[in-house]
Image (cartoon, rainbow, N blue to C red; front, side, top):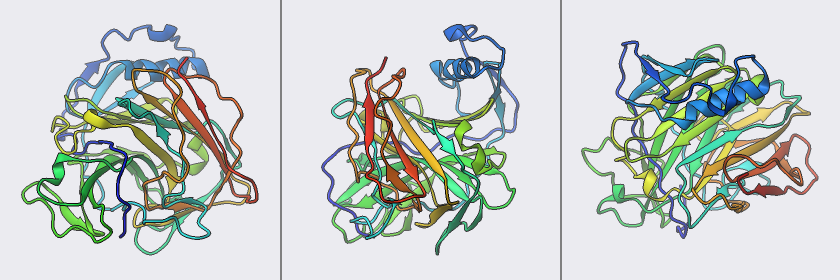
Length: 363
């Protein structure tokens, strides 16, 4: 694995929740009626419910679930994340590559710091099937991942290792067939000199892989298998805080969440998170997600940075090594302002057009 030298500094976190089989309710303090939410099942009502859940962080470490219209988190059992590795990109995008392995847009708010980033799919037309294929991941029909990834960043987790940087991913892994998916965080230490790291820090849970060091969060959340045709109902969120990083995923009217127990101690996400990539790609090992002909998807990434001015949207700034078979196309010329600064771009199974990215300040 070859990685470029790093100029931008980003920080993301790693190890999550200690897992408990006990059921426990955590009220989302002060959320009753938040944003004028009305339990009528409308799109606006469900959106307000989702926003209300995120206005108050998880109050304790562990795994949780909430169902519309309730804003009370129910504690559920955590699972052990699958031992699948999602390596970072190569030095340069591969010739002829459509989306992924470095060829992607990301939201960039530097020099400001992100406390949470939110990925969604405002447009999902004629998305019928997806198959993950390649050499080293989970191949098969309806196998894919949603990845919300950081840029590479200077991290104290490297310790005495030279030419080392941190990199983290908020991952939802959907396995082939009908098995349950998994929501978790994966952290990496990656080489910045193109030669690979000589070793991994001892006693810290790191495992050597792809020339770098990797570890999953100690816990994950089981989510019922999500058909790719439902991609338009998905919202994935990563949150950074010194009290512990969290990952959320909304599937229609059900929200899943997890908070770690290590107080942001793996890579210190909350100290320097400045940009995020979000997309649908293959399921591990650098594999590709192959969509059906005619598929068209737009991707929106929002980032809370406390400033609310328009972000930038650099091209070829993706960090994951996984890909899909879609092509970038022109983005909407104007996108609706959200609660946080955001970007939007679009992808299609048809090639031949020039991709663009649209940015918006917070409303």
